[in-house]
Length: 208
Ligand code: GAR
Image (cartoon, rainbow, N blue to C red):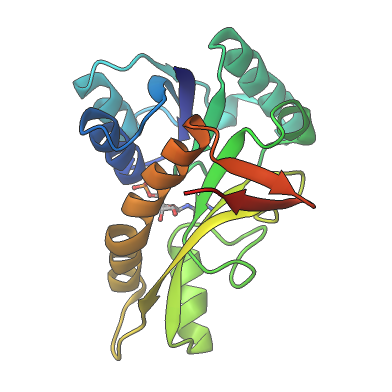
């Protein structure tokens, strides 16, 4: 059984999708053993508590920069003996001290079709605002490994939704979460925990 540590910052609907998937047996070979929040009072912490999952709060605001914050996260991941780290709405970019030690062991969900609308500054609703401002006709979400560059690691899974006339950022966000994020994130986690993702020439190859 792999130890899955989930990093969160907000509402935690993706965390909930992971918890539900573990309970229903969609996630095989792994167990969520700890939730770490970058924000005190994040609703994701309630979700962990309601499911009996231990949690920690490591507030981003208590650290002067990304490097010192990342060191604190790294220490916690090592203490928790994390085999897989999932960034589920985690709104802080991790320094390479974490991404190098956990290379191809950190999975992120990004709410757009990478390489569009991604990188520094693209997070949460801002991503959907940018997609609507551009006028794209499809959008979606990407599940990918995390490396030293924001949203640039190997892509594991992607899923697409249509953009409809009159969509607001909130409506598009919800459609992408329901149809893509909440399904593909648990799927990618299960694939990882069953050692079904190979890295070939820096790209992720999924064996289903
Ligand atoms: C999700 O849409 C996730 O893809 C996005 O934030 C939302 C968090 O929702 N993540 C990012 O933008 C990271 N760059 P949740 O807290 O309800 O899972």
